[in-house]
Length: 253
Ligand code: G
Ligand code: G
Ligand code: MN
Ligand code: NA
Image 1 (cartoon, protein in one colour):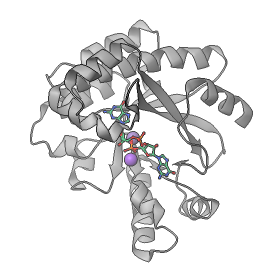
Image 2 (image 1 turned 60 degrees about the horizontal axis):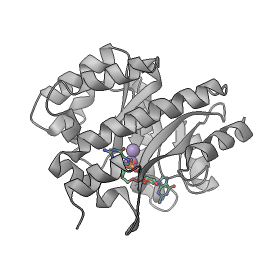
Image 3 (image 1 turned 90 degrees about the vertical axis):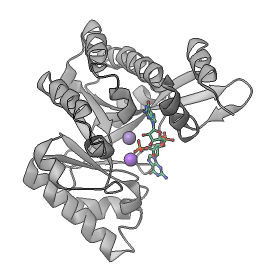
């Protein structure tokens, strides 16, 4: 059983890493964004997927240490690829529990600022549950951070409660269409229609749409027909260590 202390010790011992997955813009074919994804290589247990420890971390509060550590690592990697001439925005996952206690965002803002990074280059991926929490404070923090230049994406869009109403009240910059819709885009007419409608809605609201889990060219072409802004998925590349990611971007240009 994974415990709070395993995570905290693991962070201190350097067992964690951040991988990057490229996101391609459909109109230019260029990689201008990426998603940062945490990885844990445990000395005894080996590779532990995020799904096996993020939930634990959320329950014990270790998620806040993880979040701080990931953001700092991303800032370091960001300055590395920027120094090498790459111009990329980076998307970082945030659990709702990371917005507690309220005011936590100030620490993130100070960290990004201490690395001299433009907040507009940082996108925080949250889920629809942030708006369904029944508590205004995470939403207030989102609004404050957006007014300071940070951008936000709704991750796994379509899998939560999807009260479309929140898009009116709490605008975000991007929507990420969940992989489960993209997976069936060719075979399932209903999923195809939903993807088309989400893309149209994004355009109408001025929100960028990123399709996740694109695994083949047929899916990519269907998304192009719908004029989807960006794609992410194994078809382009799997998440990879920062060195490989920098090589990928240099080769891709
Ligand atoms: O990388 P992978 O697809 O296995 O990620 C599985 C899940 O773990 C995803 O839903 C993703 O949102 C979550 N995740 C990955 N990295 C982080 C992180 O740094 N912080 C948080 N809170 N969640 C993450
Ligand atoms: O919940 P979130 O969107 O953050 O999760 C991202 C997860 O999806 C990562 O763990 C990543 O490894 C995985 N992923 C990214 N692209 C693909 C894909 O094309 N197919 C599948 N099956 N998983 C993907
Ligand atoms: Mn994500
Ligand atoms: Na997702």
